Image (cartoon, rainbow, N blue to C red; front, side, top):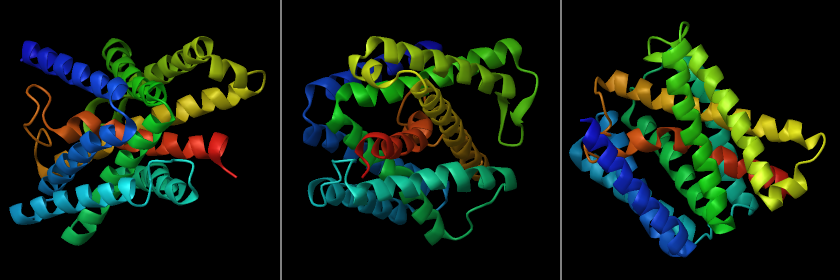
Amino acid sequence: MLKERIATAVVLLAAFLSALFLLPTRQFAILVAVVVGMGAFEWAALVKVSRVARYAFSAVCAALFGIGIWVVQAIDPSRPEVAAVHAVSAFFWLALVPLWLGRGWQLRSPAIALVVGAIVVLPAGFAIVGLHSIAPYALLMVLLLVWIADVAAYFAGRAFGRRKLAPAISPGKTWEGVAGAMVATIFYAIICVMVSPQLSAIVKGGSWVLCFGVAALLCAVSIVGDLFESLMKRQANVKDSGTLLPGHGGVLDRIDSVTSTLPTAAFLFFLIAGGP
């Protein structure tokens, strides 16, 4: 199982990095459209709609993503209408989902469940392409923050974990793991500023507080995204969102933290660098 998991991870990482740095943004967006469609299909399966509805929802989300990228030009995250989509997503993850997790709400209406699914997968797709259009390294920088937070939370939780973060949703997660993730992302932010001429020219003096605040916020929202998918799987009584990726489950299992973090990062970019 471990060998299968590692092999899958290596293949996925190699394929992703190749696409990230070798493909122009519009061609890169084609791959993202496929991932959006797959994620939408798995979401529809989690909320127990019919198989026909799953395929239809997947096709609709992929089509809406394509229209957004190639017709509405959502490829540019600095456009106000694109930023508005990311703002709605950020509000969903930062305000609504924590309340949702605390109260354990269930999606009983299939229509509402699919609307929520669209909010989960579509802004994330737009944000991936938008950040790639700024620079592949900008997208990779945010993704590395998510991965570092996840790994740090795991090892800090195993080493020091005592107090459960959300035992009814994900019994393995602890507050000590959260603290480890926060510390790791702060150090990661420092390294990013040190190695990036663009960031080192901006982050000086009091702006370090903003830098650390952004890193901490993105770390927190990545954890929220992870917990939200865990809640959906628990309510659906399944271990994984799918079986596409050997040793890893489904697409949503791999992008749960990304769906929350990337739209928030894109909106913060708009506020800090691209806003009016």
